[in-house]
Length: 242
Image 1 (cartoon, rainbow, N blue to C red):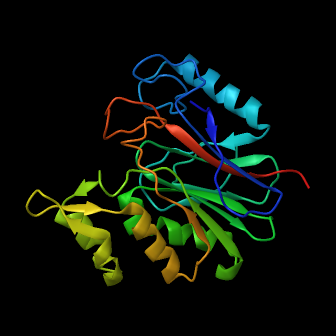
Image 2: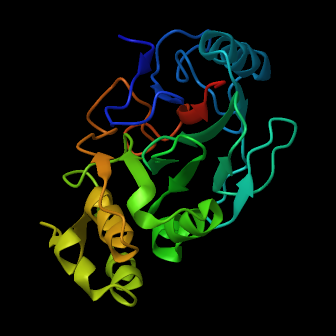
């Protein structure tokens, strides 16, 4: 099992990104082994060692957030842990970091390689506008942006109620095809990747890469739906020194 996954997107040379997996850490079951979440019941010492290994291996300093399924976007600052669900930076060596275990991590950069961002897009944040808020914070023209959709729960595993569908259709009626009726009456199978692409397209973002994962079925990643007591993996993007 590879310890890190490299996103496949045509970014400038200065832009670096990776997604961690469950391998390569010191946490014991059920957090085995590279859990980076400090809020899931794992031993604090194990999480701290895993984070130390991550920082050492990447050669950058992650800026962690206290994610709450909201739409707040902040400047990435490794010295702080603000309550937010997205961050951005134009500073070299500072990584925008998002923790997930089924929610959708979304990475952003500009084509000039001067700004990067990362957003935590569970269905609540996605419906609430966390991607749009991140775009506003970046303040980059749509045609100058690249986006990568990281590992999240896939459409064959994400069953939701009608209230989730309505939350999206209220503002984006074109999202209807992202919800397929479930075998369970009155419920739907939701496609987070398609929903993200629809919302990005509405803002003029066409260069969207990634998608196609399913954290529930791919045991390289933590999945809350597969195992409720579990760890968190990280998706990170940063700028290397010029």
